Image (cartoon, rainbow, N blue to C red):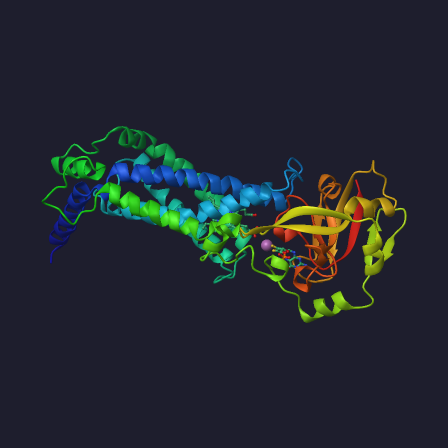
Length: 409
Ligand code: HEM
Ligand SMILES: Nc1nc2c(c(=O)[nH]1)N[C@H]1C(S)=C(S)[C@@H](COP(=O)(O)O)O[C@H]1N2
Ligand SMILES: [Mo]
């Protein structure tokens, strides 16, 4: 075949694809606009809640994650994972809707159009990457070597940048496509669009082409089904429906799920007669308490959720000694501004240290807890003592605690 023949072949194929596009409401602008709008909303929620999760774990000079409301992180991170999972069917449907446009000929019309199309690369790859890594992470599957949080964080910025550019480029078309009932001027398109709106009779010539309404309906149903079978991990009344969620909030020792079980060394240290709970740092008098002594201090009971970054949460009743009480006993004045580091005897793990701002540490419900639901903590929940404080991501609710270090500002 000659080069001219091949070029003619490519053009013929492109024309064929284009006519399919024009004939099917699944691939028209209105379908793409509706799905794009839905994805714009879900990605915006995902991005904002994801950034909040980042800030809750990496406080900056200009933003300290507050201790109240106690259940705020439960809402933001629950939304993050739920909107992320619900986006998967939306993204697949959107990619399928616009897929034939990849064959457009000529591939671009102007320099601006070329830039717009190049931006689709980070947009599509970034979206797929975020949804894939996020889902794999909550399923505890790590088929990669890079750091999940770092890559998920930076790709989120890249994707949202490309999304802003994409929305800018498509805003006009989207508004027009959403306003108009009839989406194309061609007769084939007009017929299909009518069928897609479900107002006219289906075109008898193309019975195999699904209507837009059916396509969007199935997409919405898939998205709804994903939500219904996972959101019970944090929305208590739906817990029994959470068949696709990695955790059910009511299953686990003492009715609370577990993330991370103790090693043999941690178990040995937890049950050792040498266990001491220490309060040290910028204090008047260091404390070194046996478990008995810790338990005999004035106690406090609080109802607080444990909220994993992975999207599950569980409300429970915890009893222990407040961080404020421990600081007061160690002679830290109530007027001092402190940073508190909570230390685990799970040495060498990523959870060994977690930090609390002054506001978080002095909260009336910030507890070094030893009881859960009125019984001593189960080994898996951090026996003999753990931190539980309002509005903290689960990763910062340190288990198997042996000390708090107080630093005065
Ligand atoms: C199925 C979809 C998704 C799931 C299941 C998911 C899950 C998660 C999880 C579990 C975390 C917490 C990581 C940790 O602190 O250990 C997280 C953080 C984050 N996510 Fe997602 N995510 C999804 C989609 C997205 C999307 C679409 C965006 C942005 C548009 C996004 C942006 C972020 C950001 C900025 C963070 C904070 C990262 C950090 O702490 O450094 N995520 N996500
Ligand atoms: N020392 C230590 N603390 C830890 C962990 C851990 O693995 N080791 N896991 C954290 C995570 S990710 C969560 S979600 C909570 C879970 O607490 P739970 O297992 O009692 O539900 O503990 C946090 N504290
Ligand atoms: Mo967690």
